[in-house]
Length: 79
Image (cartoon, rainbow, N blue to C red; front, side, top):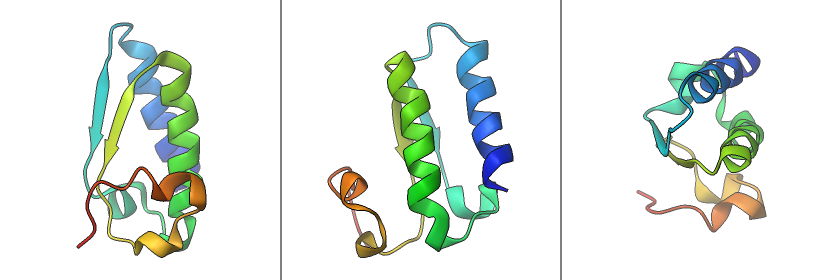
């Protein structure tokens, strides 16, 4: 679920003091998160990354318009 996935990402961040970037592929099935909850999970991950100045790159299958306004500007590509 989302909380477990956030805990997993938090553990990766806390275990590596010089981490600069994290790539998360297929976030929705890996995190067992539904598309409607993607924006909340991405926002929470971004807060963790911002606190440590880490770049996060995530791939997921969701329509850009389903993301909140804070995240749509971060979309690199939409298929």
